[in-house]
Image 1 (cartoon, rainbow, N blue to C red):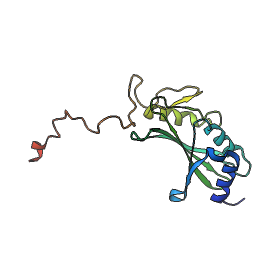
Image 2 (cartoon, rainbow, N blue to C red):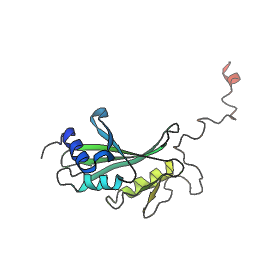
Image 3 (cartoon, helix red, strand yellow):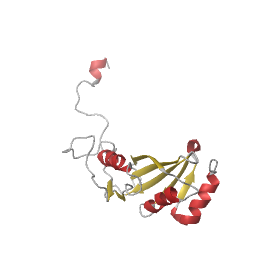
Length: 167
């Protein structure tokens, strides 16, 4: 089978999930759409198990933080159909006070480390994950460094004062 057409892929997804798939767009020729945390497991399973689509490779799971939005924390999945040579990006936005979502480790074992990294940097809790703990930061760290909740620079640093630069 040749490369899948974007319109065919959108039609197949909307036929299966209807209005649970929203905001389809194609930035940089990469089909991107949004769904809810209640349907993400079904969408990922459909993309992987459908014989025509065959999105058999999970490229990446990461997070994003938009502090000004109502649903401020997002999980972004990149899946790839190696058979059809097509990639898809799926976004799920969560409430920042309780950012929980179902794990994808039941579909792809490689999701294990990606979800641990996303938890470590964004604080997103993947329910059902076999070993959700910090992977890159120290274990006793109480913040999530990729969230935009803190000032970019320490206001108490003296080496950044204007008088050092002749201002």
